[in-house]
Length: 243
Image (tube, rainbow, N blue to C red; front, side):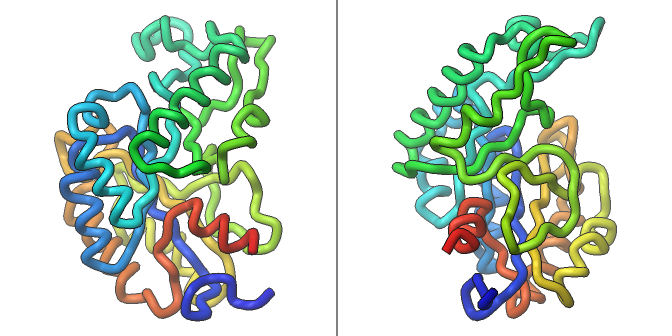
């Protein structure tokens, strides 16, 4: 395979951020742009910050970042006795029709913001099945008409040849930059790409978060290796690999 990425790079990292947090549009997106990086922000389409700050989120997309589909209401499969999610958004109570409708609606809401026809999807809580325990239905195929890649599960470096439609990621929450970088360092010597998952950036931004200074160290490492590693959106990488 010829070098698939800009400037003949053969490795890429997709920095992804979940849940449409204010810090993502106000701090993270500008920090990425300052280093020549682009990220994918997975946005639940019913979340308040998107609607209260639609112009700011539109500016995030206009700066070259991706607004990814993260459903409308962030439904997850609840554990018995768990206080979260709200029972109304327990995927065990969803039919396949209901989740398919929610996925399409989320895509259309985001299309009003950024005009994109296709985008990446991040499975909420990593879950891709609805219905009662023991009678689950996988809804991955319902995403294919408008989705470039589904992020679900955990994985390290992914191959460039035949990238999967469902791909795992490297988690950042609660970890140091050094720990995350150790999982990315193989890309300095081998072809491939990796997805990196973060929720909040800094204390108080989310119950799951990476410390602000650790996040800065990760971005600085990415910038220091920009000649080898392309810091791109999920859909940007997928579209390049598709030719």
